[in-house]
Length: 466
Image (cartoon, rainbow, N blue to C red):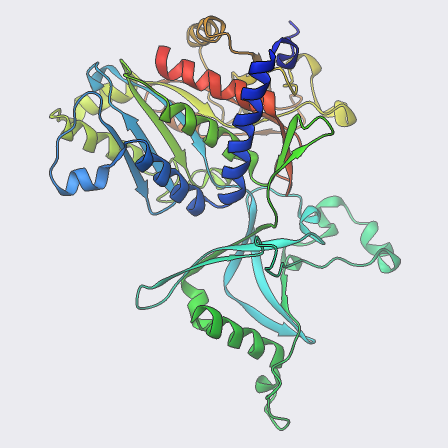
């Protein structure tokens, strides 16, 4: 069952729509490289599109009714959006779920040190990465520093053309014979992923200073931090600073048919879900979009999907609708349908041995549906039921959405997981879907503009028809 390439069917008008949508996406993913930045951008778009902050509604003991639109941001890292439908919420919701965290390096709590006239930031990588891909490329720092008095200092260094950038060094090829004999997993060790932060010593350091006081490069860095941001070394303890590739997302290919960007896993699904949600008009079933944190490390913690954030938020909405009770909440969740949005591995002809060609996702063939994820014997998977898939097929065909089905590589080669299995624990119908990605988890990932556009169309159809 070979699926048609969407590019072949587009009219001139549709090609313009694909390009316009991609440009909006490029702006979003360039500005929202971290979960905090994404959450802020999403909240701003919600406000512009008539959504009310649910926490404000709760604080004022406000009421909700059909047609109301509300959103909630949790710990500045996770967002839930709801457009209340005309049907009772007990009948369930149509839910889109994606995640806005991405693989990266995090600055440790005691990170700053000097060694042989270099100042470094010690890091701990986050999520599954090939460590050797993160050396010798320009890097930027994004995040927050929270001081003891509660003041928050926003950090974004390396994105403006006038900013400095940062780097993890690598060993020159002339001296790397021993390094080159190592397995790829060991070529760069995790503890070697330290960011070069500075190299200029503080000029006024005393010549007769003690050994500790001789750390003139570190002293210069701390002076710059104090002068520029008003922070001191101790403030790193309560900081969250992420090290990400520097630079904007770009169109890719001589035909400009692709997008190359950091963090497309899974911000490409987050953005398409977000725009589809903002365009919902008078839904019958309540429409919901979840954009979560911590998926790359198992959806753990207070902002991950395994927390009670979503369940508690739905309970608050039921209360604001005048519908209370544990049973009503349970029925609402069990009667819901969900597209668990996450990227799939795009077939790469240069690494064909890793894929089952008949069950792989291809660039340009549209939105990807994945019946199951997991590893090898489907371990850790949500395996969608056939009846639900049949409904999804009809929706997509009726909505003229290009789609394909795929697995994540050959059976015994590897595997992966999403938030799908967590939502399925409520008894709701869930299937994985999203956009095919090349270079997944690399500093720069590649997607097809056609697939991005078709996924957005598919999400719109689902929110309206499911």
